[in-house]
Length: 191
Image 1 (cartoon, rainbow, N blue to C red):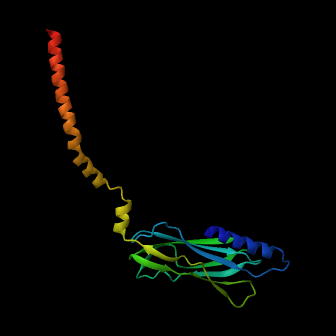
Image 2: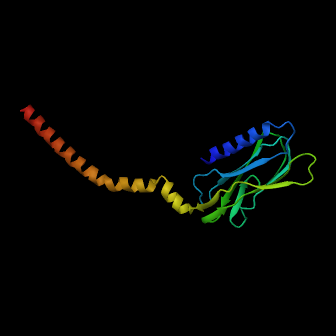
Image 3: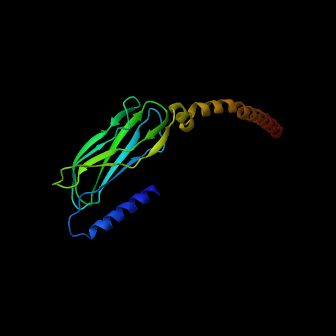
């Protein structure tokens, strides 16, 4: 649903800007997405930043900064939280991915990232904008995640060991009576 809304916004801006003969300044649509299904303490969280230029000219000196992930709560594993892109041509996009690892569990507010760019080559003042906001997310403790999603091999092994007597004893009784019965039958056939 959220992706359809973004696509519709891009299409509306693209249609609105195609009819003009004069070059319109660059306009960036900026989204921030958390790609993980589960947010777990000590495990990687992938954040994707997408920039779409729906304007008629190139966006220059694009600077993306995300101050959401402080060093006391998160460790940056891959990528950078502050990125500079030289230019984004009209009608194109740019993406950036950051991987962070949370050091604590609990509820966390994922706020918007900030973008600043020059809308044209002769612009003196940079435009500043904010990305979409993923909102609040629950980072679960690793123990809880592991308890829910681990293969529980030790549990299954202990179950197998505990269920062995209920399977082995009846089989042993059946096998001993079978061998006794076969021995009696062979003795009767020999006589």
